[in-house]
Image (cartoon, rainbow, N blue to C red; front, side):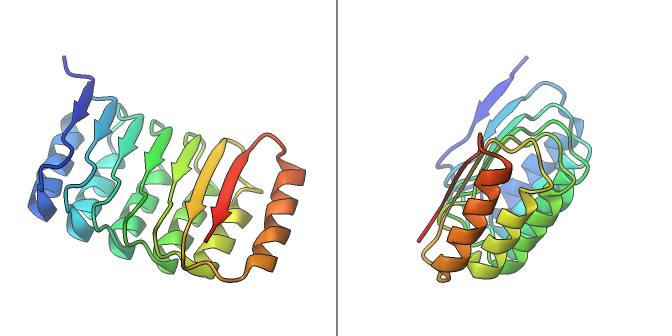
Amino acid sequence: SVTHLTLNLNNIGDEGGKVIGEALTSNTSVTHLTLNLNNIGDEGGKAIGEALTSNTSVTHLYLRSNRIGDEGGKAIAEALTSNTSVTHLDLSNNRIGAEGGKAIAEALTSNTSVTELNLRNNRIGDGGGKALLSSLSMNTTIKQLKCFSPHLEDSTAFARLLATTHHKRPNIKVSFSR
């Protein structure tokens, strides 16, 4: 059976994202799902997020460059509160703003499976960024967090939070920059 599924650059859009979401609810074999550059958007992101609440096989999920905004980000965050199989999540180059960033941060406070999270080039801003860094004090499984964003402005506050995070968890790799 198929364990790795890569459907990059297929422009599947929201509807394709919904179909993938439906398929994930009954999937028991795909562990690595790569859907980069497909214009999935919020509706597709929500469908995939909803599917992750019951899917227990996907461990690596790559959704880079899909126009996923806050609504899709919040649905994926909601899934992370109960999903225990996803260990690697790439949501880079999307449109996730402060609300989505804060929802993901909140999910990380209880998630025990995600070890690598990539949120580079989103729109999380200072509020979402601070929430993400703060969540690391409660999450002991994240080993790598990437969050480069041109929308981060308060570099002094981030430097303090990074120092505090590094002091509490010296083995974590965190990259925040703008």
